[in-house]
Image (cartoon, rainbow, N blue to C red; front, side, top):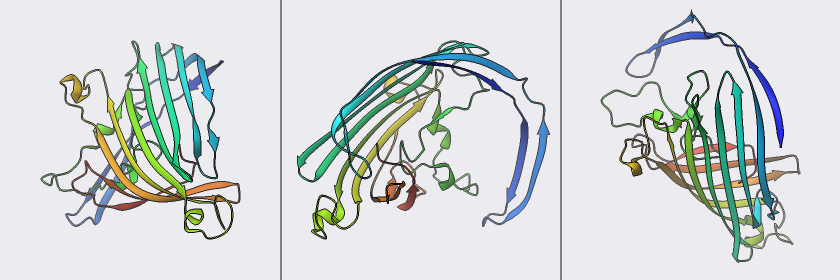
Length: 254
């Protein structure tokens, strides 16, 4: 359990950019706009946590963990945030790990969709790979079949992930021990997620928000115990204009 107080000041600007059809920048203009007044609010967080997972070099390899969290907020925002995070790790055959995660994070209440708060985003590499912000182009022609990035934003989200992970050098027999000569994990993954608002609910409820998914393979390496670096080769299934591409990360696996 913990509590806190936050003060936020706002600054607004409009950025106008123009490109030729072949992607050459023509101009960029920044205009200052009137902004909302400063706000402040208080919050407290209650959490129930269980963790029996055994952590390997780059991610957990056995056990399970879960967290249920409730965060009421009072002041400029009257709402509450709910998070449920469940993770399970199986070892069907040593040294292969099957990892699963189900995550819900949502804002509920009167001010859950206040425009002064940045919306939740499921395109982070730690959630649904293949939909990171920097992978989208500003120069896509309006008539081309494409992907609407607004599908990735909302006040609530549901994410599910599955990975097969194993020590690359250990499986190849290069070196001794579980990881062999160096702690590198090979992964095969599938990610799924959906973000929605009260006005645009998921398609399962008969509304217009649909889920996104991706799959791929990658490597994660533990850099001398200081940093976990990963590279994924990912295919986002719901982006017809985007093929396989490389995506990097700098944190452990879920």
